[in-house]
Image 1 (cartoon, helix red, strand yellow):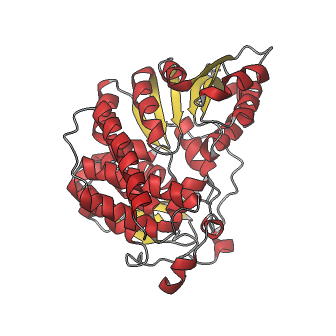
Image 2 (spheres, rainbow, N blue to C red; image 1 turned 180 degrees about the horizontal axis):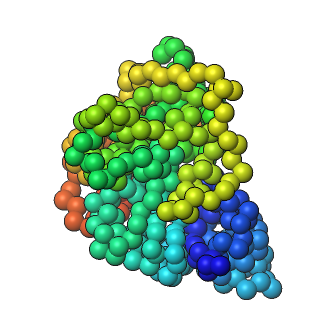
Image 3 (cartoon, rainbow, N blue to C red; image 1 turned 180 degrees about the vertical axis):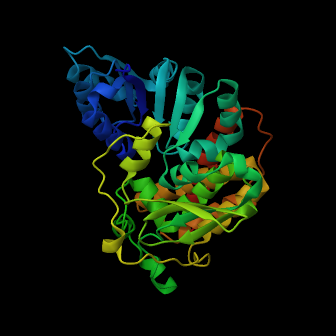
Length: 388
């Protein structure tokens, strides 16, 4: 019997992290949990550390260190906190790192972990959007395999024929369309946070759910696909597929279009990333096409959902514009969730920042982080100064 796979889970208390822990709990002999991290959910982090016997538990919010330490008294888990603790566990050698921190907060940890893991199971799309060039170069240097966890990129990864790259026609990303796919434009001004958090198919964290409602998430995924698979923007399409059964497709010049299908359950993509190049059994409900009855498709409406158009524009331009798109969206979504912006103002903030900001020269990840820090402050100032 092979030795258990040593894994670290960055963002263990989020939706991806919790689904990963479900899979690990179902086959405990297959995994040895080395480190778990969380931003501030100290109770969930402690529970996960106890259940898995993790060697390290790291809480990013240093004010929660004492609470976490008290919860883990009597265990063999070492408790760490803050940026220093996060970077310390990122540099522990493991077989697989699951990078599931939401937003650009996951960039430093992800980048720091690459030399110390054989496989990076990547759910933190924002890291690739902002610093794809640097991350991919480092992964190549250290022979670290990046296996995407986002369902769309996992689907492409599973059917992309590298040996037939020259015959590629296009990548086709599918989008559910979110909760407002059929809502009239005149009603967008009345969208509340509560309505936007009700995704029709997927159970995700607040930030990603709002991104799905604006289609900014699909814009981020468009950028991520271009970088991960080294495919130019004009060879990537987005189609709306409300049932979320076909997770993405790859079309070739001979007329063949290959697709990966499955129920809208992130455990499939997570399990594939954990097991790659093998497949593990999961408790995900098998797909029954007879029960489904039909699958439907339509073009995205870029007038009602301009964030997707803005993401494509940023991808065409430069790395700096990609960072602007990502950071402006993060800050705008945060303000919307806190009832300081309306739903329709999220893409307006993104567009304003893209138009008014000149990116600096970006040579390394530190430059990306510095530019992101500037953008966060500047975007917040813009939101406070303008009445939309």
